[in-house]
Length: 345
Image (cartoon, rainbow, N blue to C red):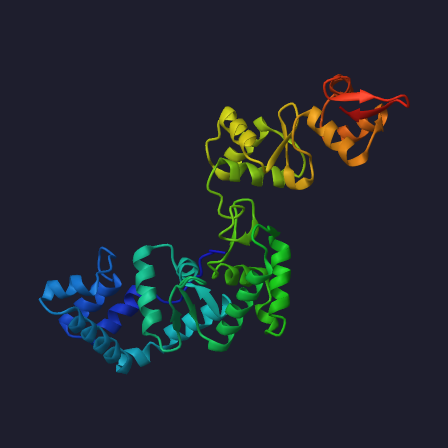
C-alpha cells in the first residue's frame, strides 16, 4: 500500500519557483508554516508571530495573502502540469486517500513530503478534509466520490458487531457491495485497502483480521488479548507454551511461558481442556475440571452409562479415559444405579 510513485518533477524546485513571487517576509512565513526550510520543522502561528513581533492573526493574514499571490502568478500557471500530475496520482490511488498514505506514496523523505503537502494545499483541485472521530486526515479531488466512500465506510462499520473479526478478503467483498455503483476502475484490492485505511473506526490487527478498532480483538493491549487472537487463529486447542511462542512471533512482544499460563488461567475467555491445552470458551467447551464437566453433562443429559459419559467428556477434554473413570467412581460426587447408569450425588 505504500509503494513509492515516481514523479516527473522535483517538489523542492517547484516550491522554490513558486515562492520566488513573494516578498522576503512572505517567503519566510510560508517556509516556516509548512516546514519548507532546511530543518523541515513546521512552526505555529504564535511562534512565527513572536519572531516578527506581530499577532498570530497577522501571521495568518500574511500566509493567506501569500497563497493568493502565488495562485495568481505566472509561475503558478506555468507549473499547472505539476498540479495535473498530482491530481492524476490521487485519482490513480482511488480519488480519496489518507494524507499519510498519499505522502508516503510520493516520497519517504519528510522534507520532500512537506513540499508536496504545500503543493496540495496550494492546488485548487485538491480538498483536504481534517481528521475527526470517524476518519483520518484525507485528500480528495472529487467531492461526490469522497462522500460515497465515507458513507460506505460508515455502513460497513455499522454492520460489524462489537468483537467480530473478518478476514480481509471478506471485508473487501462487503465493501465492494456497498460501492457497487462506482466506476469499475476503482474496484481493485489496493484501492479498497486504501479506502479502508481512511476509517478511524475500522482497523486491522497484526494477524490481518479486520473489525472495530475499539475492540480488543483489533486493538490488542495486553497478554490476554494477544493470547485470545493467537488461539483464535490456531482454530483448535493449543498448549500454553505454543501460545507464548506465537505471541512473540505475531506481535513482537516478549511473552514468558509462565506469565502467559497465568494470564490464561485468570481469563474466562479461555478453557483448560487438557494438560496445558487451552481452547476458547466461545467454542462451546465447558469450564471446570473433569469432575465439573461430568457433573454438567449428567445435569444436562440425565443418568448415563459409563461409555456415554466417557464419550461426551472426551468431546470437552483432551484427557485419558482412565482419568474420567477415576473421577466418575468418586462416591462423593457420583453414584451408579442398578442399570449401570451414573447419577450426581
